[in-house]
Length: 219
Image 1 (cartoon, rainbow, N blue to C red):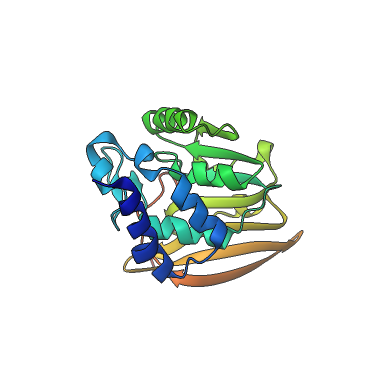
Image 2 (cartoon, rainbow, N blue to C red):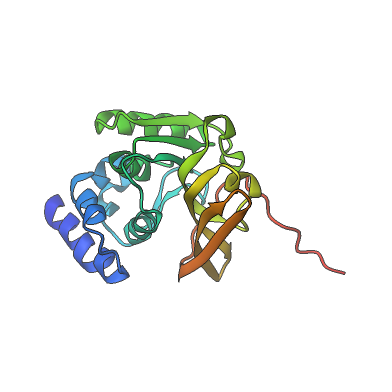
């Protein structure tokens, strides 16, 4: 398998058609080796347009390349940004964030995945990302505020506690809602008690662990 050709095809056939045109994001996808963050048993799927299983639970996956790329583009990370990444998984998104940001704190609730992600990042030479085994639904208020927060999975709704951890001008990107139609949501903190929300595109993704599900019961 020609990995470089597979990487090129992924970018040109999956990612560009999904309106990912930011040259910085495209360059990262060319240089951060996605296959090094895929489990050994699934390395051949690293460039395929699909979610890659990471563990025994159905929600433990690497999101599809086009989804990760467009979320990264929407987050618009700057070199001075402090970033919170929730749902580390294999560490691939954290690695790309690390290349763009000043520092990244990545939270992963599963201890085995957290350890594997830390190992993957060390092997990739990414030194400004800290992986912490923690419940991401509460964020990391003691380490904030953050200029950018990324949720690498879906939630029924974005917890208010995470919005409070954004700096003024900070952005949060998450996949919000319920199947069959979720919306990728970009929330920007515009003031002490004000946030602006847009929903630029549709996308389904597995749930992040430990985030609350609102009650469906109605009288």
